[in-house]
Length: 463
Image 1: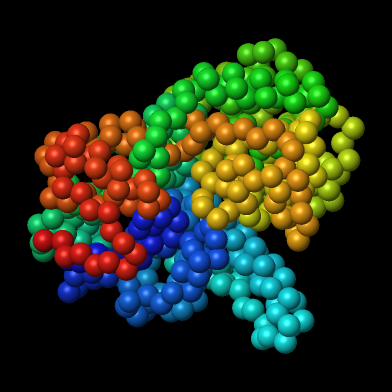
Image 2 (image 1 turned 60 degrees about the horizontal axis):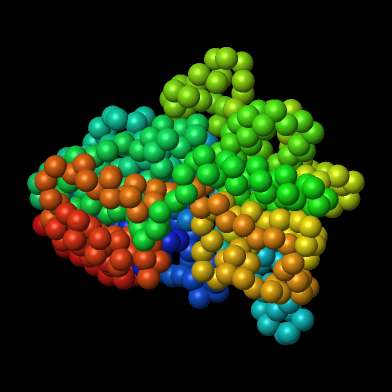
């Protein structure tokens, strides 16, 4: 069997790995490259095999950097089966059309600009129709069931504790008598709402993420205090608290935390707006199949009559008109909007209306990829361009990294520690070029594990 690294190699986006032997071709994830223009060019690259020859796509979870090229894959000829958990199917059914809508809007804007310069129109990566077409190839699979893909290949999905329905994928290749484990994105232990990551104790080849492989997160009590302090201080000055958040996972975790913080402080009149149609739909999906995915603490809250994703003062703004009205509030508010890296969605409007206000605050609660608007703000830019307009950055900028749905360095080490026997090789993936090698060195020194940090396009034989 051989593996080709088609994404998230010395970078954190575009997750995609091609496995081949003489009988079968399998993709693990097919994510979108995100960040600057150079990174996004990779979305148009050709695959090294005919897409009609790929038998299966195994999807670890619904985030766009893992699922976002699936409509393109199907548009170009993929006819195989896409296996994922039911929650991932449900989330992809709203996330992929939403991603397609963004592609269409950006292509329309780029086309207008191109036509004025006498250049040909710009085609979107894929359309809403392409995204809807792709959904027919999805098949839900339960956690902890071994599924035979062919005479010699079997797979099993285990809970990764990252977002609802996220999975670690185990793959057995009987022909070569080897086992592969793809970590997907690993979550933090004791993360609100969802269950902790599953530990795996044996593998010949491990493909492990390294997003935060060189740093530690703040603890949860600290983040709750920090969030409450930011809200109090900002409201006392008459400003708004703007929180860019991923629509799936991070928004729901924020709702849970805000529910707890507001109750613990016996606070009243804290207006919180979820200004993202995608996040609103995702929150409804989070309320399905709770016994399959929720942890014991979240289930206990539900059984007591306290919905962890709802509380007094919370409003969902679904329409564009409702969103625009938030710019004219006569009171302070917490506004949570997508996209989490600030490159698309309603968050850009809220940044345009609040970044220049010294009384307002912007709170980053998730990873900001290189080249994104969020990263530029977080790195200290004094001026940013939004919708072609220069906007001064005078608001207070905060980062609470313990909201990350990714395990930190210690969490990743703890997950790797559970392998009873040393793997033949550990491939360190899904980490930036200055982080993945650091984590690889850590694994080598901590466990004497042989590690490789692959480059995009590299091929390895797994024997």
